Image 1 (cartoon, rainbow, N blue to C red):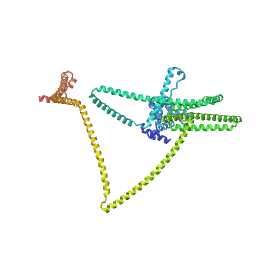
Image 2: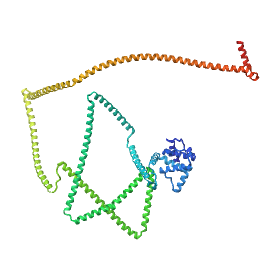
Image 3: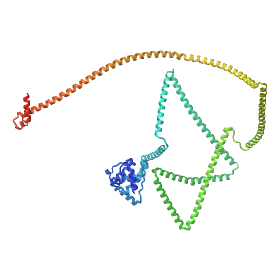
Image 4: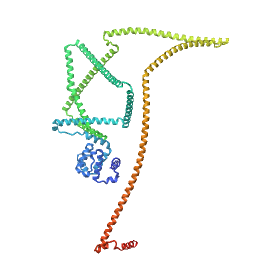
Length: 617
């Protein structure tokens, strides 16, 4: 229990709760405060639970928490009586009830957030059957179910995208790179537009280019359509050949067939097909429906955690043990009639299993036969495409084999001749090596004789002179050819230069006119610029004078304003003094002695001041 409380306190002190509890303060919480902590944890899982429980009735709080815990698949320990105590403990805020709930919630907060989010959209509203008889209600319910299925698929795609490794930073970089490429393309298009605008009849040329692009796209579409039609024709030819082969096989089978054998074969096929339709296919369909219903049930439920899987495994083990116990009890009874029936049942089940196995084998054999026939047709088509001839059969194949044998004998003879040629080639190669050795020996003897006679290197120099003369003749021939090529190249270049000059002559004339216009425009621009500069300088001087005048007027305005405030204050002071003087005159002149005493002149200090003032005056 202490470890559980420590885990709860540690998680409540972390983000996003930040409760700043310790073990003592958390254990000393009142039931209402403990319920508020539980409600805060539930609000973190489901934002709809953000409620101050002091403003809510206890029954409503318990009902709301129990419904959310049911959606999150929390299972309190114990049986049905413990469930009632669990509800009561949740209402009164009992610690033995709330601590395990907090521990369970804080252990799997992220998983429960996902489960609460999915529960908002995947918990189906049960509509009574009598309301579903109305068409509008039935259509609305159908639309609701379709939207639920669409949400399931979208949520799966979203989870796959989250786990696929695509990051927002990479996508943003790709988007920024695409935007930069877009800006570059826009600039290039603008530059090309500016270039094209100078060309004559550019609108007509753009129209022709647009038509060319449209025609190219149409050509691509037609090529694609042609390819599709070729594929369809190929499939149709294959289908025709397959049907023709089936027809041939059926005719071949029906040549020597008798009506009794055909009827027997048809009866066997009818029995097999009736067995497949009445027994095998309904069982498979029922099993597939059960599997589909089970999978839909699994998909409709929220995602299960590791603890839920462990609970299910424990339940499965318990049920398996109960089944084994029941089987053992049944075996212990040993009733004779049931024993005989069990033998017959076993035999019937064995026969039915054998029947199903043979039916499956027959079905697999039929499928294999169909696949082999399909492969044979494909191979025949391929051979026709490669050789342009059909596959040989019967006597044609025998004749083909005899031709191959005759060709093989011819091949063996040719191979023998090639072997003889190879042997002769080896002999010639050996004689070549021997002649080379003799030549080297003769050269060595010649060199020794030249050394004795004092003319060493004579043969070598003679060979070199012959070689050099041969090279000289080849170089002279190459020079003659290169001179001819160069003269032809010069002629071609002169003709190209003349053509380019004639083509550039009108462009040069236009360029001269444009240069004159450019000079005139630059002169006019310089004049306008000088006028603008002089006008701007005059306006700038006028603006500075006006700013000085405005500054002086503002200073005068501030002085007058301060003088106005000063005179206004003086007037207020004089008004106050005048009011005091009138009040003094009234008090001094009045016949009431109390009023006279209030007068400033009758007080001792004021009398002295008054006498000093009078003396000074």
